[in-house]
Length: 378
Image 1 (cartoon, rainbow, N blue to C red):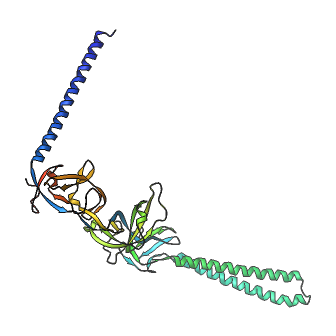
Image 2 (cartoon, rainbow, N blue to C red; image 1 turned 120 degrees about the horizontal axis):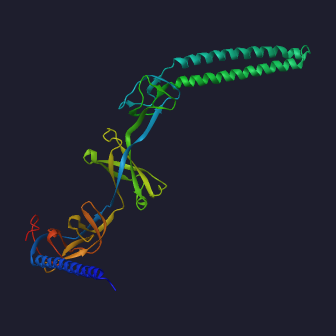
């Protein structure tokens, strides 16, 4: 048997549930009543609208991608040898040409090493010459039996060792000559200095970047493309590139590369668009939007984008009927853009649809045709 306290708790809970149900029902009833009154009021009013006939026209679908602009070529320029930077000839923003000297390292120690290597080579050549003369003098003596074959073999070995020393000295000289040449750092191609990492007086280790040079006469817009879109792109296609930082200024580029393999796990591809930049208006790092036209849809059934009305996540239009009423129809759309929406199903060619004033309409509303600018009034 439940105690008196438990029975009281159950009684209170039942009363609370009943009250909540009554309140919820009253709220729902009021909402529905308001909707019905609004619908009746709307249907009882005549709204002035502007209409237009559904037509056909050629549609050029455009795929839009976001991209970041990058130089067509860039590289960090470094020295081949260790050394203190004696002179740096460029700064950030300077234009450089192919082969132009960018920096010069202190060459005092390297020059001395080259002189020493040259001296070693001269000495090795002299030793080789003397060993060759000795060997030639001993050959006839050995044939006459005046000296032993062992003595002749020793002379031959001495000559061969001297020849090896000459080769080693030549290699050492070539190495120091290369290092001396490497102390002068040149630009490998035309470009602009976009970053300076060191300055005169700094000690540069071999392979450490001194400056970064980029070719910005042409920029690359690298766009990420989905697997469903990559097949629609073709190398050599001319595209439009818009840059927000330049007030939406439009540039023309060309698709020059499409990734042959998708990046995992996103399964996306990279499309590279080359954009000529002879006047350096575009800057690397800018954000851009790439518009790629694809196959034209000839004589597609279209409606103006301004006529579309959303209803529960479905795009609809109001179609004018014979009794000056409107019928709201759901549409199946294809490409939408450029002010037009391609209709695959939902309306027919020649039907009249509301293009202004539809924000005050409901399915079945009575309308009056007005002049442009008059739509929406009652």
